[in-house]
View 1: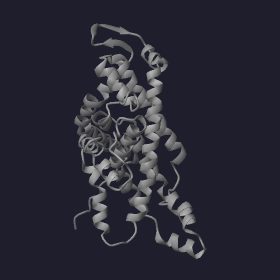
View 2: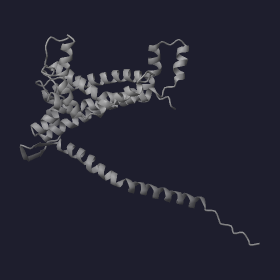
View 3: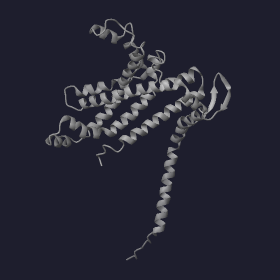
Length: 315
């Protein structure tokens, strides 16, 4: 018989060094694979953001392109001291609050309806997605035709029902113009909220409702103590997304009202557009853009503080 060969086992120190080397090689390979994507992100996102912040610290107007002067936070101070900023901020708050409230309330109601069994539910779920598939500019053009003062579908419907005596210009009155923007934006944003909330509703165990009914819970108690806590994290996502969309709304304002009548629908994003591309003031325009971003970030952090960590039942 041949003598058996015994291979000496690697020492613990050698094994640890080998595992560290393998781990290092894997991390290096992962970084190598992600390098093209990281470069693309830096070129397409990080650099424009940093350059926008740099421009916001300068006096830069294309009417005098050679007068490029560093002024620090002077642009931000000018904006915060201008009445146009506070007027547009108040209009933005009104617009955002109305849009977010309607989207959340209608989204919950429609999601609760679609979570029930009824004939044609699959067709209704498909139709709910239709507004989401329409591009924003097309959505604005569609609502422009609906609100038209002469041949608008809304006027025709209300007059035929006897709710109006004559056609009226919905976009020529400050109050009705703002509400018209709100309804058109809600119609466009609602499908995403419905999808997110409906997916959360379908994860709720039916045993919770059965046990609560056996204990004598009413429908309002079922919604308050079971449904709403389970929806809290999906509501957080909906609130953040819808608030960001409402704060950054531009397409529908551009098509429907162009900030009018007067300044009735001049939000911060529209004021940013006017400052940058109408007045050609890129310094103040970029400062406006950064203020909008900071306001959005502050609201997102507030949502996280209020809602994060609630409704986590999967653990």
